[in-house]
Image 1 (cartoon, rainbow, N blue to C red):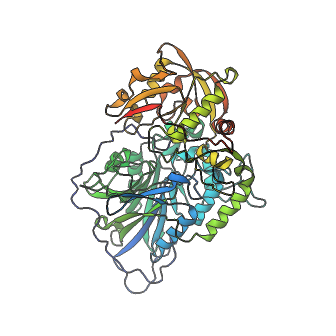
Image 2: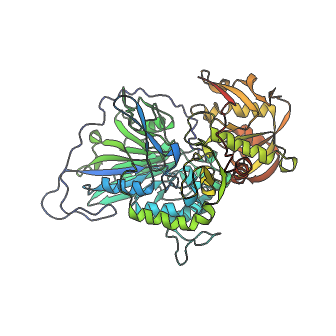
Image 3: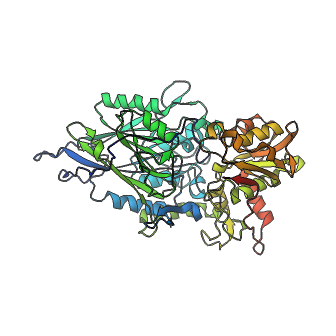
Length: 607
């Protein structure tokens, strides 16, 4: 549910003594005549003359699309690019009409091309996809010729049964078929979930791996999601499932593939890292291999068997192309392509026909921007138009007015303007005694999926917030809870933002007006929240007093590494987060008096 939950792993920076960097010129090989069909083929050569020993296989990859079929709006739709003079430029990117064009252009002249994804293709999606349980996104991915993807944590948002429906097809069990005479066909590519098993049987939920074959070339793909998925998805979503260690699982299936004669293996891992720069073209192999990246993926990469030749990762929504040494000390490519279809990675894997393995020293990889100045793919435009017509009666309803962009997803600050609006909406809606008597509200930052953008997304006019735009910000439609927590539990919860599983990558809760405190980032662990500064309406928090606290059901279940919030008692279930958000917009804005971005003065940050 959160955007960037981290595992409780030592996420230390790696100083790798790997000598050879994997940017040596690839061994260019002539292709067998007539090999023009993309992937999926199982033929065995052409019977003419002699085949070259090596063949270049193009691996195109992306991750964390989250149902963003239309270009993501506002700052969440930009990619940062460092210019030659050192300045950083924001470039608008993404949208499946452009992603399709980018991938199709990249495939030209590459007879051996396979397209893979690192999970979170669906879930937390904008209304255009979310309203229809992400059927539009699966349809778009089929059109993009995706060959394989790992599951991400968001693939479990609606539970294992719904994930199986996305894979196998069939109309929604409650809402039925959305288009007359049309049955949803399901994904034309395998979803891989090697580390997810059913509790009752111990059997894998979905396929653990798949083998892509063409003209005798064979590449195995193993897909896993992060082991910590149950901590970041609602309990219903992961009911009856067990999530296993990523490294152990990948190593197990790599041995199995190896025994079957598949020597070229790519791992698709829905877990990631944090590069030292947010620019997509930052060199994270400077000064040495993998020096510029930290986070859970580093330890994972260092533990995965050398049998695996490349790692396609995701989850942290970051852009990187790094080499992290494998357990034998050899450099190995680890990539991630930001999120929302804004980038794709193009990796060259040189396949040796004699050993059936990848020539590791010649692996090359780079991220490319999915720019919006290229032609749109007409089939994707038709798909978007078709679903937009179905969504329009709900999507276009005005909910309120804003005077300027109110940044949420696009804000990198601990306290986000849109986070304050959402927390205030929750407090206001649940403060009346009969609604729960809330005194303070908390919102998890990962649940804010977009910005509120002033520029019109359709024909509604600038400054108008439509239902579709509000849904894109809060797509989970979580039910709100109001619970009793002691002052001591409140303090502990705030400290859990920066300690325990959240120490390596803090998750700063968005707080309602009246709650103030100091966040001292020069300190470490729980001490970063200065306990003596925590006040509600100007009064110090009393550890012994009981407070009524509003939050969504995900946080109230202890999600996102906040066990203290899961200790609440005397629970009252209120309206959904989206309903409260829309009610607040309606109550606090008109066409002549639009809502302005609020001040961000609740959390004092010392850096």
